[in-house]
Amino acid sequence: MKILSASQTRSADAYTIAHEPITSLDLMERAAGALVHWLKQKYTAQIPFHIFCGPGNNGGDGLAAARLLHQDGYDVWVYLLEASQNKSSDFTQNLERLPQAIPVVRVQTEEDLPAALPKGSIALDSLFGSGLSRPLEGIYAQAVAFLNRQPAPVISIDIPSGLFADAPTPAQSAVVQAAVTLTFERPKMAFLLPASGAYAGEWHVLPIGLHPTFLEQTDSPYHLLVPQHIKSLLRPRQKFSHKGTFGHALLVGGSYGKMGAITMSGHAALRAGLGLLTVQVPHIGYTILQTALPEAMVLTDDHAHHLTRFPEDLTKYQCVGIGPGLGQAEASQLALERLFQQVTPPLVLDADALNLVATDRLLRQHLPPHSILTPHPKEFERLTGPATDDFHRLQLLKEFCAQYQCYVVLKGAHTCIGTPAGEFYFNTTGNPGMATGGTGDVLTGILTGLRAQGYSALEACQLGVYLHGLAGNLAAQAEGQISLIASDLYKYLGAAFRKASE
Ligand SMILES: NC(=O)C1=CN([C@@H]2O[C@H](COP(=O)(O)OP(=O)(O)OC[C@H]3O[C@@H](n4cnc5c(N)ncnc54)[C@H](O)[C@@H]3O)[C@@H](O)[C@H]2O)[C@@H](O)CC1
Ligand SMILES: Nc1ncnc2c1ncn2[C@@H]1O[C@H](COP(=O)(O)OP(=O)(O)O)[C@@H](O)[C@H]1O
Ligand SMILES: [K+]
Image 1 (cartoon, rainbow, N blue to C red):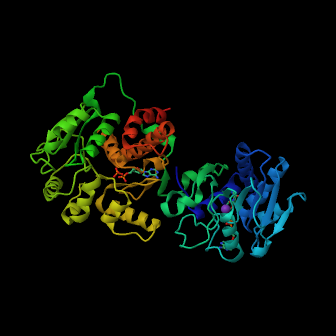
Image 2 (image 1 turned 90 degrees about the horizontal axis):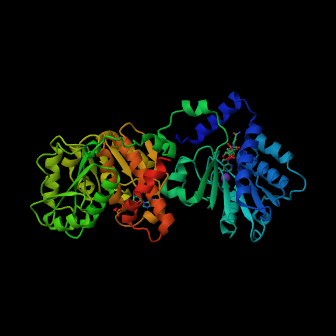
Image 3 (image 1 turned 45 degrees about the vertical axis):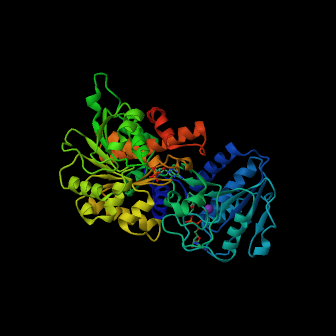
């Protein structure tokens, strides 16, 4: 699903108004209807709503929602913040339509704000939406501070007021901290990025019927991974298939004290549907692997504690995953240098393999094209240097993927896959329970297992991050987020495959 910028969203509104056709006022009515429908599912008419409306169409949404809630028997208070002379015409018309019975407070100075919102009420933030053009100041910033002080939960309409949809919001800006954001048609980029995403709280997308032709014809490099797409990628197993049908993968990693990482990758690769798995570990890992992962074949390095060389013949493997628990011994670095100078099967590189690539220019120069790299933000910073903000980081991601013709899985709450073609795919599954050691090793195993089965690099990345997060969600449902550990992810991977194919 494409993610649209604020200006593309404006064009989508305009195209819908011209081609559906529908008046701008009726489109706003539809948006307000969707908002109120959502609110009514969640809150009874005993819950009072305090609605803070700015001068633009976002304020217009708030006014229309106020009228609809009032008609449905809810207690509604409206606060108007319209210091700006540029009131939108839909705002003005919705103000004229507001029933007399709704109390309206005109807020010009801070003194016009109430001391506090009554206990048990909900605040709706419709101060500014995607039309925000500069940080909030004066009474608007004071209203934001007021809302952020209230114990009452704040529900933002379309986007938390003060947050830029697709540019960095300057530090120290006044931004509403929403408990929930009800956004129209598509999530905003800002919701997916670490510095801004937390302002949106839990966000929900409300479709308002923007014109499908516009959505099809508009190009965006930014995409959201959605269940329908994931389902379309999954390949069912055929009756006469055999283990050779599902690929043979090699996983290389583990070092003294870090054998668990590669063991977990191995479990995950097999649970991802892989036909055959070989794991190469330092000598000391032999018994550990054969005991903890009896389904895998084990090759041992001559060295007891770390990797010194890859197997001579790699042609029998359809994918090689390298890195979990690898360590950064010089001999391992040299082994990687030799590997990169030959023709290799598709590679998945993680953890210390990435750290070695980051520090060794030769490795970077010879990075085999179409490799999959799975850095967390710190590992990514080692590869590219620091980013000044989240949008700059996306730019660095784009440049890195283009320069090295690789796929980078930049991990986080909304993991982002960057491609050599300059596209970005944001994941929608996963939860903070997954912020625990070893979950990245599980992802490496899943990606290696999928790639070896013949999924393309992009398909493997999309399926891998989505299923990894979905397994995390199913594990958290059963065990809770706090107690979730990395091995739960491969325990629930089967359930994730099942759910994704429903
Ligand atoms: N028909 C439509 O176009 C629809 C629009 N919708 C709503 O419209 C919103 C966008 O509306 P607008 O484009 O009117 O944008 P806003 O409601 O965000 O307001 C923009 C107005 O505020 C001014 N402004 C921007 N930043 C300011 C600042 N820091 N301080 C003071 N004034 C500032 C701008 O000059 C402009 O006049 C969306 O977020 C959504 O809520 C929805 O109703 C769906 C339909
Ligand atoms: N708050 C979060 N929400 C969703 N997913 C998360 C969150 N925190 C971490 N994850 C996921 O957990 C994994 C952590 O990987 P990584 O940092 O490499 O851990 P490790 O090195 O311990 O294996 C990534 O796939 C990441 O997307
Ligand atoms: K808002």
